[in-house]
Image 1 (tube, rainbow, N blue to C red):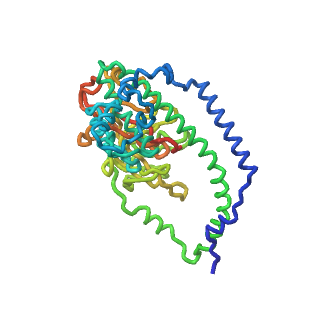
Image 2 (tube, rainbow, N blue to C red; image 1 turned 90 degrees about the horizontal axis):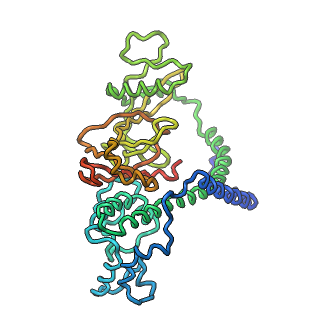
Length: 422
C-alpha cells in the first residue's frame, strides 16, 4: 500500500526566511519607484489641468451654503446618515446631494440595466436614499470604475446650462483615472509579494506530485489510445460552413513559414499526408480564463462581452462570444486540442458620430461608445481568436437614439474589468 502524503504535512515544513522577505520588500520598493519613473517618462500623467482642492469651492458652494455656520464634521460628511427621520433632516439630506431626483433615477436605472458578468456584484438600486446604508470599499470601487462612467458623462453633458457641469465631469474623470492607476500599482505590489510564495509552494509540491503519481499509477490497466480517441470524439458536431472557413483562414494565418497549410475538408481528393482541418468539432459553451468564467452570448450576455487583441501589436477590439469550437489536431501520432472562439464584433461609430463621443477625449475612463445592436438582429462581422487573445470582460449599457446627439441607438462599453488578470 503506497504512502499518502497529506498537503498539511507540507505546510508544516515551510519556514519563513526573514532576510529573503526584507530583500523582496526592498526589491518591491525599487520596482514601484521604477513604475513611477516610467510613468513620468511615458507621459502617463493626465494631460488636462490639475484642479487643486482650493479651487473646488465653487463646486461645493451650494452644498456648504445649506450647512449654515455649523462646524460639526458629521453635518457635511457625505457618508453620515442622520439618526432622526425629521423633516429637517430630510431637507438637509437632499441639500447635500449634488444630483437631482431625475438624475438619481437615471443612475439607479443604470445600476439595474447595465450588463455585467456574473462575478461582479450588482449594487443596490436605491442608491442615494438614507435607508440604503453605507457602501463597502469594493462597492465604492465598482461604482466609480464601472457604473458611474456608464452614465455620469451623459447626465452632465445633457445639461449645458449648468455652469459647473463641465467642472464636475473633469474632476470626476481625474478621480476615475487616478483610482485606476492607484489600484493597478497596489495590485502590482501585492502580486510581487505573492510571487515568492507561489514559487516556494511550486518547488515544494513538485516532489509531492511525483510521489502521488508513482503511488496512484496503475500500469496493469493502461488506458488505450482507442479509448482516449473515443472520449475526445464523443459529441462532435458539424461546424457551420461560414465559421469553418473563418477558422481555416485563422489556422493557416498563424502557421510557421515552413509548415504546410491545412486543406479544406471539402477539397477532395486530398493528397497523401495532407493536413486537413476536421469538419467535426466539439461545441463548447463555457470556459475559464485567468480565473474568470466566459460563456456564449446565448447563455449570458454579460459573460460573453469581451475585449481582446486580434493580433500581436494591434489595438484591442470588443464584441460578444457567439460560439466556441474545440478541434483535435493530429500530427506525428500526437493529438492536440485547440479552442477557437467566434466573436461578433461591435460596430464602431462613423467618423461624424465619433466627434460626438465624449469618451474619445477621456481615455482614463477606459470606456468607449459603439452602435447598439440588439441580440435579435443577428451577429456582426466575425473574428476568430484563441483564449490567449482575451483581455477581459466588458460591462455595457445600451442607450436610446439621441444620446450625445447621435441619431442611432448606442452602447457604452467600460473596459476596466480586466485589471489584475495578466
